[in-house]
Image (cartoon, rainbow, N blue to C red):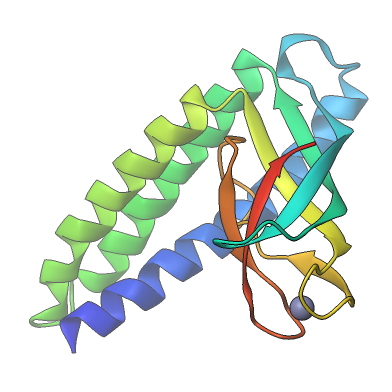
Length: 164
Ligand SMILES: [Zn+2]
């Protein structure tokens, strides 16, 4: 029961965080970039069926984040988790959920400050079913590190994103 609630909380944290990033994105453009800025580049990738030689071309969108931008993201993540934990405090028993929430906040915040490159999205042809698929690559804060496990949204086959 408690475990389930924790999972839900993490998801909420990620979603709240994503909204904050979208806002930040706009303001960094208005400021004219620099260290606070973030920009996206298309990267040619390969989709491989896990444990097989069959591959198909894919394209990933990688965002390069400036240090100021990353610190901003980290601080917002940490604040988000503290606020979320505070919301659970008045609820008997559920107040214990605050500890893992804040720990998760510290984990995600650290990861975000350290991630100069994140994989925003990836799409390509599924090497299994041949459909055009957009791969799930996390909630936008996933560090860009290949190979990355994903799956096809059509046939649910386990796929691996690799460098082309
Ligand atoms: Zn497929």
